[in-house]
Length: 107
Length: 117
Image (cartoon, rainbow over all chains, first blue to last red; front, top):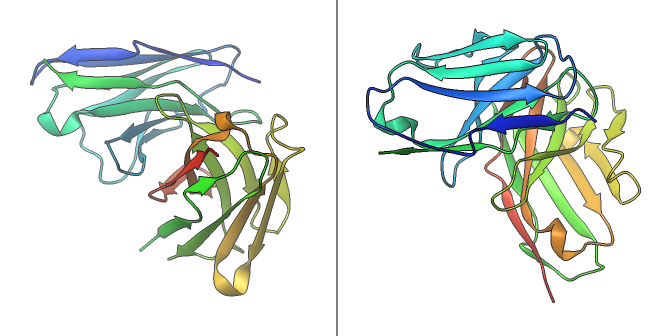
């Protein structure tokens, strides 16, 4: 199975900050990497698919980059409503595997 | 609009069988696949298995011996059955639509399952 190592596990930032979250795959997954946002008590929401494609309706402050084994989710200017847990998903190989998540809080 | 909703018991006894239902609307089970994903509290999600749009199934090898996924297209429902439950099976169970390009694009709200006597 492909292991997805996500960092950091916890992140505290201020409104307006640029925030980056990373996922590293244990082997090449090309660009088959998604990012999700999960607010407390809610269903996960797809933010980015195939490494850098913004899902419809997602604010443009969210962006994704990377290919191969190293990927980054960037929030260009953190907003209060972005407080959530973020996780990555690789869909290059079976079984699909997820990162452990990054909990983002406001400083 | 696309919706998925999980239902099932919140409490299961150790060694017993978990039965969950995912009821979907806004899309056809013969056009899209549906996956089950679970998430232990405070941990990352785990893909469990998939009901393909053509009725075939795929399972995570770690769970394959205990897991069965089926469907009733007339009722727009996908079912999960997992036997021999243990305490580390406690967590939130989700069903999610598996889009051919976007992958897990819509998720249900999840159902919390506790394995305890």
